Image (cartoon, rainbow, N blue to C red; front, side, top):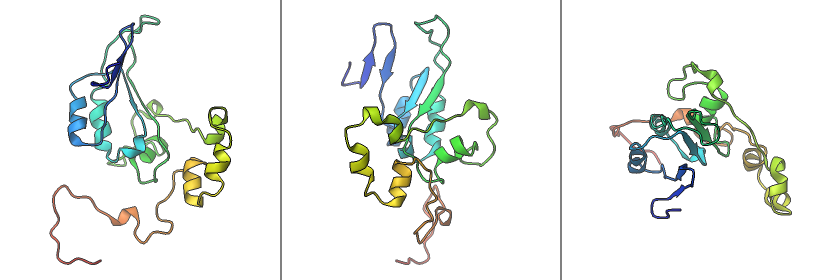
Length: 178
């Protein structure tokens, strides 16, 4: 284990490399290497699908499996607590649409998902965890973290996600309302 480089190298030559994707500089640093497998932990924290598109360009390792000697099929894996339905994860994995354009995916069979809720993992949770954590949780948080639901963000909000537009530059402000 190399704590400076945040990597683990195994005797068979396999390596796990851990990198953050929270800044543009960190995303760009990943672009210098190719990988056979990419795993994005807590993918709902990755706000922009553009980051995923950049990562995908690094998925081109032609390593050979030490188990059966075959070339590794490049794959990406993600885990998350379900974000709002406006997030790229919902659009990509549930709606099977390209998140930025809304166009149907051409390779729908290449995308899939598995839902795991706390009750599916009870044997690996501390005694009383489910009761202690979820019994007094608010409905919206419970539906997200216990039931694993993607939620509409409009419930109880003054503005919906659709009310906001994103710009690359600074918009000209005529007046400000607070």
